[in-house]
Length: 95
Image (cartoon, rainbow, N blue to C red):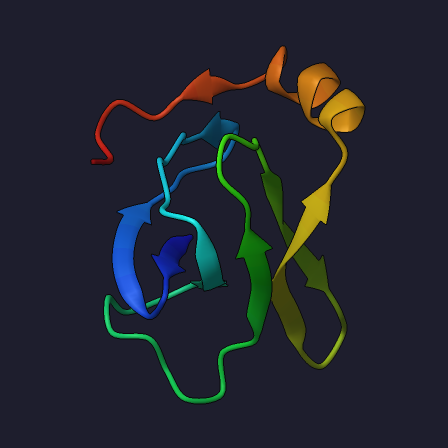
């Protein structure tokens, strides 16, 4: 999945992987799409106000349907993230 922060392409994140980013405080948007390194206008965006010295966990959700798939980002709790990260590997190819 192609991941974006503030419409800037960040990574082609593969299954069972995660990535850590240091993001400046302030309002930011997070997005994911299946194809393309340029964010498409109709891609769903998740907005979050980042506070200094705080850790946020964002999960990419892919819902598959008969006629269409839905891909979006959502914030999850630290407890949920800690449990899920144990099953994942950090993606070293992303910067």
